[in-house]
Length: 319
Image (cartoon, rainbow, N blue to C red; front, side, top):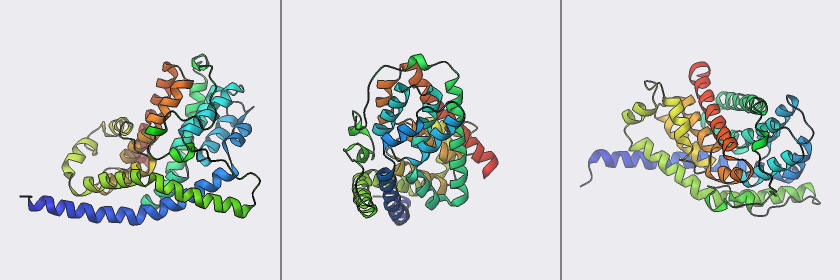
């Protein structure tokens, strides 16, 4: 016989699942439409051309900014990165683009805005962009350019599609309607938004389901013992744990909403999201084709460090 406490917890989980659905689904469809528009007007080849020839400093700022506004998944971001390096762009500039791309994008901004409000979203975008710029500058001065492999990658290369949680949409051969009118571009963006939503829905539902169970079934004291303020290692632990939990940014943010509702500090929650969004299996598979192991470890370590830095800033300065 199921204990009454468990029934109450499952009912609470169901109600929270519905709440997440009402909040996240409309936001996600809207963000997907913005992603479609951005890809119609700013394809990977154009981004690569804009970044070529930039030097350290201004180049890092431009690279991080374009990485944030271009909605590329790993199978488009990494080929753009390869093109930049093969064209002679400094490694640090290319890294600022690589770091910003998964951490600051339309999906993240839209869902963060809906879940946590304007102030948290503005702080998140500002801190992660700054971290991507600084991270790129630091890596550019470490003398690691010799650890880049001499390979050719083109947009659409997709050895990781089967494992990329919810990002296969940008690996399916989409090409912008270069000769189309604005109306045709908008129609294409709407079709892609719906396709993106349908393909990503299972991962969104998975994240919502786990988040709902955390909200209703997992004991609050257990969560706080691991990720609460009383654990001095909560932020580093969250950043490290986030990586293998990766299921898509939308699913990660559904989990983040649940953790925040359970009283976990927002900085710890964001460290968890950054770890999962930046050190994902699809990213690492493709980057392994471009980077030698040492540089791959530097990338993963930098993402985790950014997650920890963002977490500490939010926990001690922002909130």
